Image (cartoon, rainbow, N blue to C red; front, side, top):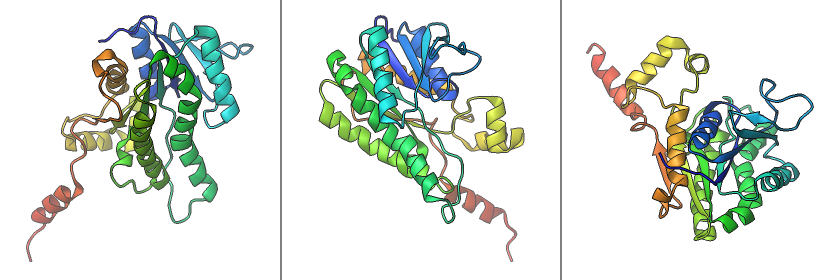
Length: 266
């Protein structure tokens, strides 16, 4: 794995799940790491402190990445404590399922603000520091941005927009700042969360059996891709969308054909 000694990384949404995995990977690679989320995890920070050591050497900073003032304070805090910023991973995001025919405008705006506008805002505020360091931005996108996303329409649209923004910023900010995206597939961040989201162990096993890799991805899979994109090995990689999904999701028509052939002929 590449080393990032003397490098400083900021990971949004770094308190759990994929973000936690990315934080730990950069720590293991020698970087000084800052993680942020809207709330300080109770098990990691004293009540009287806005930040503390997390995941060994990572520093946690409370910030809502949808708010411009808080984002500016976040970047200022990183620079005050570390003096530089080399790597930004825009990981904060997500969406619950919602019916597109009845969902409120407020919900739709909130999902787009978190998954598209927030990464743009954090990238903009971090740009001067990243430019000075000739740094790297990695946007965590999703397969929902490259294929239909029924039930999470706003989320899919926002992730598609993030992939477009990645390519545009790579051209606008090159050569000083490289900008890339990771297209994350189905990710299992914990057994409990996966079972709840995918219908228990039986549903999880059925889904994994249909995938080319015969398993879902892990936070470590995404983290390893981040390490590559942030490293010198990817010095000529910018504007890319790296698909980390184990071969992708088989097209649904194959299931339809298989089921049709199994039906008794009349």
